[in-house]
Structure formats: structure tokens, C-alpha cells
Length: 141
Image (cartoon, rainbow, N blue to C red; front, side, top):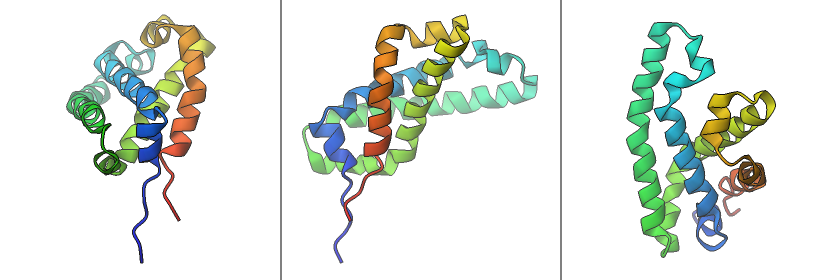
């Protein structure tokens, strides 16, 4: 039996999907760095907040490594295919960015608006996020 091929690699490499994924990873990193200012976390118990901050600090280097892996392997489809191991992490970054765009738009809270930045661009990114979430899960039959 032949092994399934990750079609998400084609999306990343040939369809430019790497752009929204890298943007989402950078957003996720900023979110984790500023987590202490989040209105959601300010209401959390102090002990819970410190655990979340510790986890965030452990995740930031993983984000940096993932961005580097994407950038370094875009020239080779075989290398980029190795990122299929990181699908759930990529989904988490994309979902975080999408959720923060929605929170910025729905609540208008300064934290989310500042985190997202250019709201016009972010609104346009939502479509790309939905496509990315769908395509990075695809494997050949």
C-alpha cells in the first residue's frame, strides 16, 4: 500500500499558503508574549495565570523553529512535507489569529485591536485563514 501524501505541502509551497501561516504564527507569538495584558487572563486566578505564562514562554521557541522550518524548506516539496507533523500546531496559530480578529471586531477591546493591528488587512486574512485550515488537513486518498 502506498503512503498518503500531505497535500498541505503543495498549498504551502506552490499556492503561497506559507504567507498566512507565517503571519498567523507571528501573531500567535505576539499573543503569547502579551498574554499578561489580555482581558481574558486578567480575570483569571493568579496561579492559573502564572501557569499559562510559563506554557507561553515554552511555546515561543517552538513558533520560531516552525517559522524557520517553513522558510528554509520552501524550495523543496519533500522537506516542506515534513511539516505535516506540525498540523495541529499550525491549526492552533491560525485559529488564534482568527479568534483575535473576531474579538477585535466584536468587542473593540483595545488589547485585541492593538494585537491584530490593521483591521482591514485582518478582515481580508479571515478568508485565507479558512482556506489554510481546510487545505493543511488534506491528504491524498
